[in-house]
Amino acid sequence: MSDLIDTTEMYLRTIYELQEEGITPMRARIAERLGHSGPTVSQTVGRMERDGLVTVDQDRHLELTGTGEQQAVRVMRKHRLAECMLVEILAMPWEDVHAEACRWEHVMSDAVERRILELLDHPSVSPYGNPIPGLAELDPGASKVVAGLQGLLPLPEAVTEDLKRVRVRRLAETLQTDEGSMAKLLRVGAMPGADVEARRLDDSVTIGSAGEYVEMSAEEARHILVEART
Image 1 (cartoon, rainbow, N blue to C red):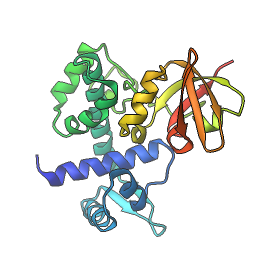
Image 2 (image 1 turned 90 degrees about the horizontal axis):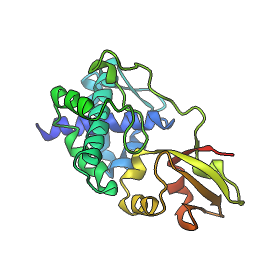
Image 3 (image 1 turned 120 degrees about the horizontal axis):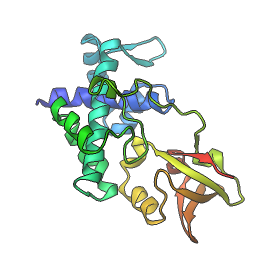
Image 4 (image 1 turned 45 degrees about the horizontal axis):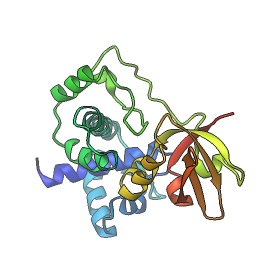
């Protein structure tokens, strides 16, 4: 597969994840996420626009076309199924899985996707708690509804200066690229589905359980989506 196709798929997935997180996709946001230069992003987005994958409005907001959305969903589905396989079958270290899945997403066939679904008893979320989109395309019995953000809050918005109990639900894609942050969360058991304790400080948040806590910047912590616990 050519570098050109890989780059296009990577941009499609990035636009999709920005939309998923409620962030307006713009070229500047793509540059931040991927570490690409402004001219490189503009050139790639321009090519995608000519290919009918995205539109750019007068406010420089990017929107996936129907074709672009379909392709983005497929790439993200492959990415998250690859994460499931790498964790459940290959037992890769949790903090390394995202980067490896970024390679698999470009080469995985539909047949392999279906086999992963069968082997893992039809997962609907990734190991990081994020919904796997487009499963109905592989399995007619799968739900076509992809869970949104209802009831979930970024960690800094869900806690106060007093220690508060929350349940970790999702770790956003951008946080998964930071191996150090992922290792810290793993160390204190702050994984999707886990109940943890957290409190907000001036520019950071502490999170943990069983008396062991780690401190994360507010910017890191906002990519941890939680629900309140009583």
